[in-house]
Image (cartoon, rainbow, N blue to C red; front, side, top):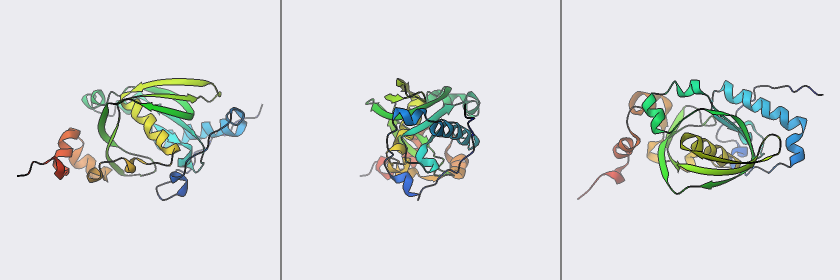
Length: 206
């Protein structure tokens, strides 16, 4: 049996064409191939080294409909408990989604969001609070995922990557800022208060 060689891959940043292209679906045979199995391992290594909670194949230069996801408890513990509760964030075991189809719920929630392909930046993004994702796993088996809260946001973010979209396509543009300034000025404020302060449309005029 061939030994898989997992390596940390280069993460592509905004401006790379692959991040703006629709990725192609994989066949079951491709998913089970040594090449894709090795790629999955390397994607997990790359995501954890970043560190991040999700990584899509276009982010490492491959236009394939595959993403890896993991939200570790240690990451959540770095967030204030009330913030984690507000975001409905809990640990998510490592898993793979291939050729996903997403159905979004009607309720939207707004939170700041970042991306490994846009390092050092963040913005408020409205996403569905709950989603259903039908996909294949790393064994080419059909899986249905029901998710809400932060997990639902991660899924939406990664599936956007597979369709050539970045969070900046959905963001409240006036909230776009450096991560450094977010940490310095905004991180402790409720999102609704941030919106009120930065969005003139929220101000009442005579």
